[in-house]
Image 1 (spheres, helix red, strand yellow):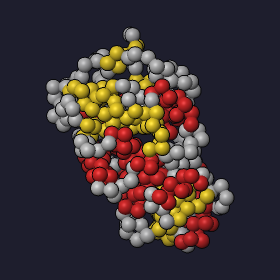
Image 2 (cartoon, helix red, strand yellow; image 1 turned 90 degrees about the horizontal axis):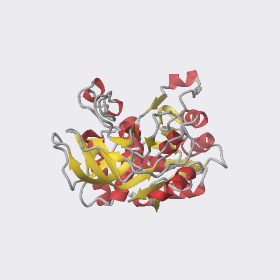
Image 3 (cartoon, rainbow, N blue to C red; image 1 turned 45 degrees about the vertical axis):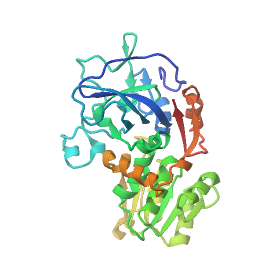
Image 4 (cartoon, rainbow, N blue to C red; image 1 turned 180 degrees about the vertical axis):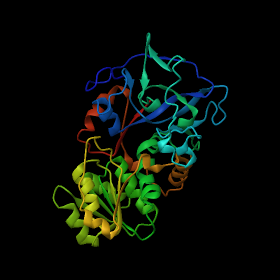
Length: 354
């Protein structure tokens, strides 16, 4: 649990309420450690404290509220921060990631789902996955095939849907397109796999760590560029003359500008990385006359109850290789070390197992 921004998490017993009619109690099996958790720990977006971090979770349903029909006890599930109400204007447009009523908290006249003594505890994005149990709205959950390994399924709830969805839904990469992926962490490597999956003719992985570039080659990249040794834009242009799509997964000004600069005529740069709210970028206005586009995406523009089961089927059929993305498995008592490691990550994803 986080009591002070910038400090380590503490380990405490929290009281969990019985499920409300639309809620589900889940026993956590696996929880991914995402860079977003680290940025929240450091106060990038000051949320109410105390706070339980973690949002990339898989588990088993233990109990359901009386109105819940989608899942029942014993079902294997994964969570997604891109929950939905089904009735707001964004849900009606199919853009669940922008839902205006995600059900992350109970109404103010109800007791909080989690508490520490007399104090309510905030679960990050309504989930709070660094815990042995979750009490969540049923619309944050997706049912999984029983054959799907739950440690791999946890990877799909954030990194998977974001990287794969950025390629499939936001950028809409087509067979034969050329793609550059800037940043080969957990999300970027999923973007590499997504580009291969949809039939991109060339997938160029860009990072500053050789180990990540080696993993990108294993997962479907056709070329790699070590950005610590070469100018990424010039290298991409030497390889392709300019790409149809650049997927930016870092979220800083220079790489966003590089993504736009490496595009071919009518190319699209899709920004996946979460940038600081005050960040601004500059692009040459004349390049817009070549019909180049700069766009963003949130959570891979995913429809997670459709996408996650699809990705599970691809994994079970050998068409989506999630295994290399799980770089380390730890216990919950190692979570502070795993969060600190995200300041200079070398692997794809660390997963807490319970």
